Length: 575
Image (cartoon, rainbow, N blue to C red; front, side, top):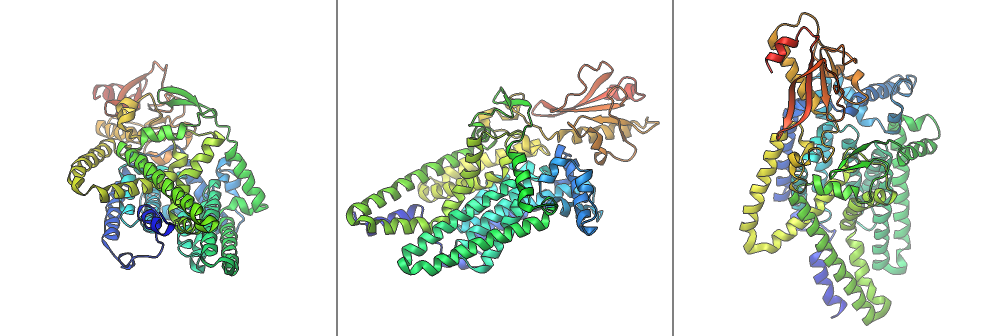
């Protein structure tokens, strides 16, 4: 078989022509319309339900950080409260999203927490929206809508879109940065508009979390393949093209750091690169140590097995998502074998010159490869380093949309080859998607605790995994308690409550309605609300259980009344 004969077959399976087809050049096609419709539905549902979501552990200090970081700029860089009264670990995160949220909160459009949840959701949804052009530039237009649907039906992703104050902005920034690099890589020599966009987007990723520096690796990989195409196409005459690619790559890096410094105060109070190194080392050597449940075993955050992240995905991603992801791996492996065989055949027949076509095909598939890199490299790095991880896999939340693109590609690939079996596929997929949707509605607003059938669902995973590690169920317990107290009309003094959100008990005032106040002593509080993470009412004989927040028969928050409180008799009888 000749190289020229083998090439079309390889192209048909995986290699993507970076020049848009006539259908792709249309301003709106069916795939774009479908993706826009999915995003519109998610936008409407998200904004309508944003007020339902509970306050989570990291939102209290994020509120504090945002307002004080904003004051750094509005005061002309004289207000140093963010460096004096904000929790020190927050300095090592860029506050651009927290500042935007604080600015919108100051408008008084809604409650502070509702605004925060709406803002977090909007940016998270914008991050998912990047999957539409990303898929179009790599695997195909229809992959994008399917990838967004997969993310939306994954409770772990959808629920976190409302209240993960660092992880969701990072998901968005990494999505935009990856897309920007793909736009650069559309042509062998990147355009200057694409270069500037990549610089801004990668800078924003770096200025969200130090891990954003991995986008430089994405850039190097993509630009290296651009160079391969330039050399394969023009040979010795490619020198000018190589110089242009290098200049544009350096421009991206320079602009990225200018953006990061501009929006991250921590980098502004010393040598920016020294400051970044301090922040990077802080997270690289994180000594946060506690035990938690993982597949029924007790693990320590500082001594996790190398397989921790994939094992968490095995429990938290829907089974259908996992099936498509496994299919993508198998399809890609088959494509890789064909590419290797093509190269070997070419080399046997024509020597080094026979490698020209396979290398050109590889270079032109750079956006496909970039998606794989974005899905594998961050997690592979964490697995090799045995990094400190906890709270499920929220630290790698930004990787799941990349996995969804791969799974979406497999779904479209299978659909195009089923032909006669499409009706059967629809009869399986539609009820399965409906089942996932019903599960999310049942869990609302705790969608992020969703677990798949392999883990036994929420009911079977209870006690075997960290589920409500954000303590989000305490807000639902508080709302129910407030309604009961108001209905009783017996409160003669402002009720006091202790809400057991670890390390944030003294910061929960934004959760409380007027007429309620915080009490940190469980023996003095009228009410105590426990979370899954903090059972602070244990061994307190004066506290009587009056309510539980449950899902599928499992409790995630517990409300107690103090038997010394004047409300004890009425509330216990109304249980």
